[in-house]
Length: 241
Image 1 (cartoon, rainbow, N blue to C red):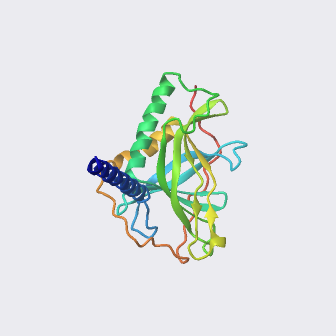
Image 2: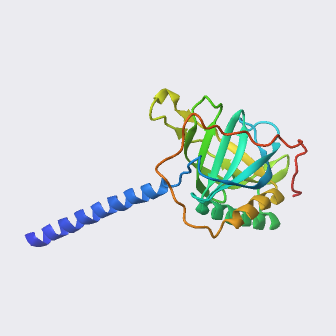
């Protein structure tokens, strides 16, 4: 009986240790997506969308932003300027596929008249992990970290928009805690045609090679993110609903 109890104890201990290792491995994989800002990249086009205000009050503003592709990390980047900061919002393959699936569900709900004006639906179609770089001036800290992006929809001025909600994330400066940074929550609004333009770019990179992440993150104070294109005229497009 004592031998049996010892066997059960040892077996249970092994299972606990194995579970801990699995959890640790999963966490490491979750943090793997990153982009070297100095990696070679290609401009693949520009898209039109609307940004919400910082406090979510007031009209949305139409903008044109550039889209880049980083082949080494297999990342598509939305490059934009918001409230005097420059941003690189990176999407890995998993995130891009989730965007395509979310947009399909949104279009189905739109056609079936299932969109609810009163529903808080900014993450109705799921949440994906992204990678964000943000910086104000060339002489300021270049912040970067993984972040999360919600996919859903929202009504503005009685019209529905497919939405990307970029959640805040924190950059902890390893050399100076007082120079840490927190990015703001940012909402992006798309008409169906605008979202289809971004989906077309994501479709081009569905069958791409596996990403190659480097230990060198490429961040230093000599590299600066240039601002994106000037704002488009504020004639806000909308979908009839």
